[in-house]
Amino acid sequence: MSPQPRILVADDDPSLCLLLRETLQDAGYEVLIANDGDQLVRMAQDQPPDLLLIDLMMPLMDGFEAIRQLRNDTRTSHLPMIILTARSASSEVVVGFDSGADDYIVKPYDIDVLLARIRGHLRRANKLPVRNPLTGLPGNVLLQAELERQIGMGTAFALLYVDLDNFKAFNDAYGFARGDRAIHMLASVLAEVAPREDFLGHIGGDDFAIIHYGERAEDLCQHIIAAFDARVRELYDAVDLQRGYLRGIDRHGVPRQFGLLSLSISVVSNVNHRFTNVDAISKVTAEVKQSAKSISGSSYVFDQRTNPLQTAKERRGQRRPTVLLVCAHEGLRPSIATSLRHQGYRPLIAANAVSSQNLLARTPDPVLLIAEVADEAIWQIWRNLPTPAPLIAIVANQTAAEAAQARGAVIALIATDNLVDFTNQLLGHLPRAEITEHATSSKNAGGLIQALQARNLDLQREANEDSLTMLANRRHVDRRIAELVAQTRENGRLLSVFMADLDFFKQVNDHFGHMLGNEVLRVTADLMRHACRSSDVIARYGGEEFLVLMPDTSLAEGAQIAEHIRATIAHYPWPTLQPQLAITISIGVAEAAGRAPEAIIEEADRRLYVAKANGRNQVVAEG
Image (cartoon, rainbow, N blue to C red; front, side, top):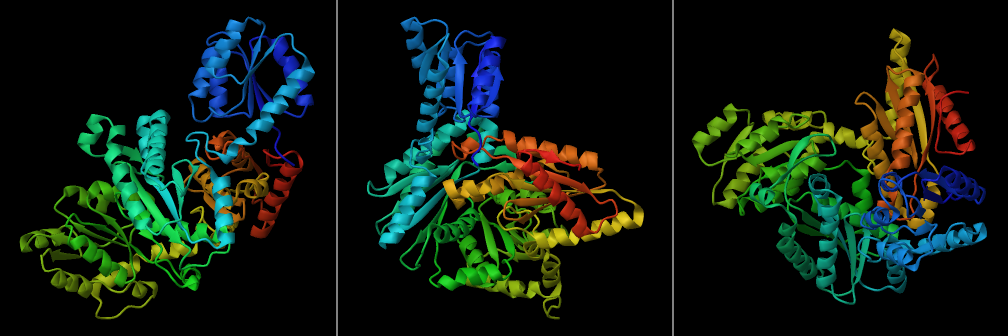
């Protein structure tokens, strides 16, 4: 069952709006009504429809101006727009078309003709997803089709996944219009640099992909980065360029300083791997992209693994502990990073404090910080880490070393031009990462090993976290609900639980591919995370199902939170990911009321299916 196409009608005549609503609903469409041009623009931006019927003569803003504004907004520029007009003068029709309208119909109109035109425009609109409406480049559907074709033919190629760093902070600071300019600029750079025979696609948002058929993938990455870095400064105001960063809030709600836009490029070749489908290559590409994201500034990372079983082995084991490295010394930085990898750590590499904030915005809790501490901002960053981590300070002399240790650094190493000597010093103090995975430690390891063991929290989180959404996984939430239910029995605390399921999610995967399906799950997780309270436990329970535990919350309060989440997801601008995308969620809410954990979840699940049976996109908390 496909979602009903949504039509937004804008007219200031109440009787005409009523007639159109009944007519269109009888024809199987969902109908929204706007009574003036200003309301039309706001409604279309907040909840983009599939098609708009727009009267030209309306208060506050006429139809011409409303169409112009909608055509200039990325969220609505691709939508079919039909003019409803009582005047048939050719001049008005011409102005309407020049404003961006696709068609017009004169009042009084023939219902059959109107419905036929609506069906025709919706059919044409359904063919648009093959190209991204912002850049006009091939979209996710064509990219997957091309990858499948080349894999089937056995063609040798390299897939370059190109992602903009710090784009959210840029968008927040300058707005969507400037953000669109950044996307256009990147698309232009890629089109100019990529060889003509390569396939260039715009996956969505700030993600692009190139299927490169030559043998010069590294040269291509270098040329892309050089061209982008040369032009990106054009997008910034002079005062921000002079300061060198933008102020923003990361996804964890922490204020940070974000550097200039940069590129992370992951490169995966099928020369050393035998990929049988798009899912397999996309998984490896996503893993390699995380490595590129761990380096500040524009960077590219190649998949170096030649053993196809290695990826599966790494996923079964524990994640390597993360170390934040902040070092401006061009010689020391790569030497330290190599030492960290040799000892089993995953380094996040930054040249300065601002760049390190960009990395912490994505990975906020490293197990260890290694940094040149001459900059006072480094000490501030260290003190503000959400979970305390030991600091290895890099200093200029013995006096600075003593001062650093007095301020809390566990070790202070004096920088030297002798890289071998410095590396040996570091390795002498740095235990292998595997040691931190065990409860016991070597007696000779000293305080640093104990500190790193205390930071084993990062590895524990890996065991309790869903890797796609970064929410709690089923194992963790099953344990937490048992603990919370025990508390309700001991001291009478309230507990409400809701089970949520994305509506028609299988169709998203079937029609648009699993890459977009995964992005929908990630966005949904972020929306739920922001809508819930810090005391709530949010988990991906399986597939597209989510379970939320709400301590000290009555059933009525839980239903209100669930309704807020439902509305937030329904109103999210999903077409920015894919023009035909519309996502809703159904939720069942239950309270503890003396039940066992399994019974609470079972009741929430039963009410979820009542919501599904009643038409979806709703919350059921009773019955």
